[in-house]
Length: 105
Image (cartoon, rainbow, N blue to C red):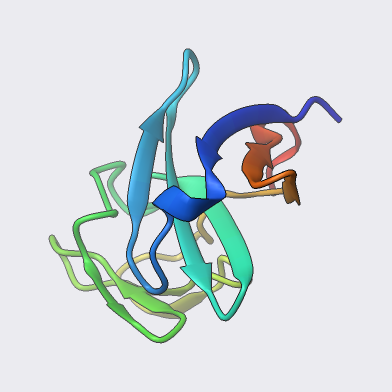
């Protein structure tokens, strides 16, 4: 695994999605009940930005076609999407958030 530092933990507010541009992709990160989730900022349905969608608990609703995803698993909850979100491993050390986007699901 190749974890890279992407953001300071204190910059992630509970239940608010933040995006971070890397050299490879744009990551979306969200903090829910002390757990950080990271996924590619792209709807699996059409590749459009998903971070500006509505977050209801752990359900993210795509703003374009209203597909719904569980951000804890990436699983599709409501069509038109049929493929899950690409989730990435996250670790927190010393107040910093690290993500390995090369090992995504």
